[in-house]
Length: 301
Ligand SMILES: C[S@@+](CC[C@H](N)C(=O)[O-])C[C@H]1O[C@@H](n2cnc3c(N)ncnc32)[C@H](O)[C@@H]1O
Image 1 (cartoon, rainbow, N blue to C red):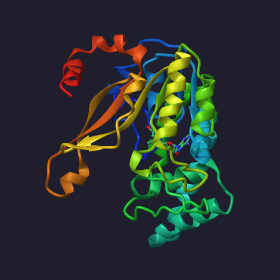
Image 2: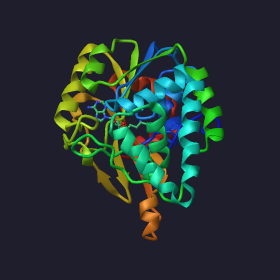
Image 3: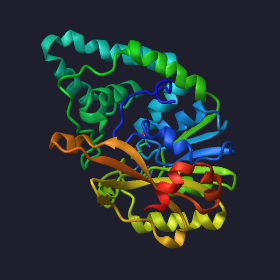
């Protein structure tokens, strides 16, 4: 599936590569997919591509990200036109094109939070990783070797994503608690909160952090209301586990998905596979007993 599933831009923590494994644990059909921590919505896009549902609720606290997705899906021509204008502008700077990134960043922080500006910052910043300072200003640096995705590469991907999700998706940028309140039995909630290592920092309005206990309490409420869910939540690499396991009382099953060789370990000359944990809510467990190889792996952990 990976080769053909469109995506907009690299986003740190994106589940694009893991999407085929994650989708194995979804029911074949369900009423609506809810993504409270959507990032660049890799899982919604893959789910639409596989036609598992016709309704999506895409949410992320980071409003400029949601604005990119909304514009890409509802108004693709306009986004491509505006992005092309911003992207081309860097070549008027000659060799000093890195300065263009800083200028767009300054305009963005001064209030020009347009989807095209955000997309350009995302496409050119280090590791596609969004960083905001205490004041809420975008403060990530540019990747000096790159110009950001060429609009000619971006355009077909954006049109395809629009085709997949137009008139099927609604968008919001709220705290995840508000989104979970909207979930009903028959919906599937896919959650990909920030890694636990960065979750306890309530640093600013875009990146609130998701304290472990609060998150576990929210899941308990979903259990009581009979809402199915899947959660990507940390994992392990080279035998070291990252993050605390979700409490047993939630009765979820944990499986480890193979996320490939760790690039950080490779830099140190080590070959270590990273595994990302996926938690499956209790009522979905019988559904995935049809995945034999994962079951035997899971029994081994
Ligand atoms: C690991 S990323 C999700 C990546 C996504 N699955 C993808 O494939 O692109 C986690 C996201 O949670 C968002 N976030 C952080 N705190 C949040 C909160 N309290 N409510 C909603 N979203 C939040 C962040 O802005 C970030 O985009």
